[in-house]
Image (tube, rainbow, N blue to C red; front, side):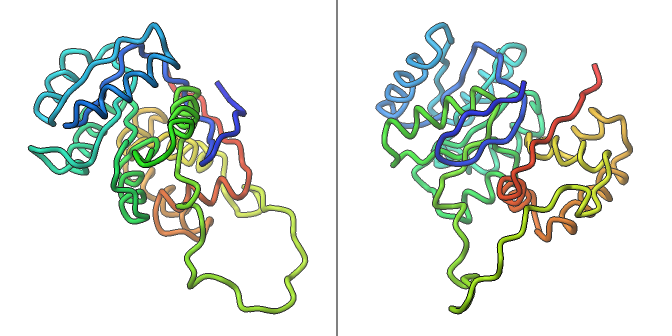
Length: 244
């Protein structure tokens, strides 16, 4: 399903989240209660599960893996590093979407979470309306990135002077991307790992790695998160047909 909602952050065409079970992983009961309220407003028929630490979360995921559609994960857990938990979740359960919901939202943390396969990063410090919009975007199949993270570093600010004439954004063909590389890129935008892309496209892992390297080079970026931002700035709409 391709969606066209416009909310703060970034929207890319990914798969719509269909699972009716949602897991909230946070060690603060007040945060879990608040998130539950927002989720019930958006998905009144959803079954919201809760975990206060990683061990409990992994047990619930194993029990509900077949119909769990979304995990909202805090990075600060009492029994394990949140990034490590995120990496394991994406590796063991690639079909389940994971979105980070954390008070730690510096640029490096956001980039690291997205590189590990998170399909969004929602700051706890944001207003309730922002969380509503971000979660609605995620449910529709988009990827939410805080708007401030999309800003360029100050060191990249161009020197003062006349601005060059605006040019139309480059197309995939302008950058030399093949149809197969666009399939790989579309799946990268969905947070899929190289192994998952191999399964979807029936390709060998070295082939996928070569495609990813070529994609990053064509977009003049160094990692998947920068690729997401670049695609957003170029205004591309990417789709792929998955094998069934």
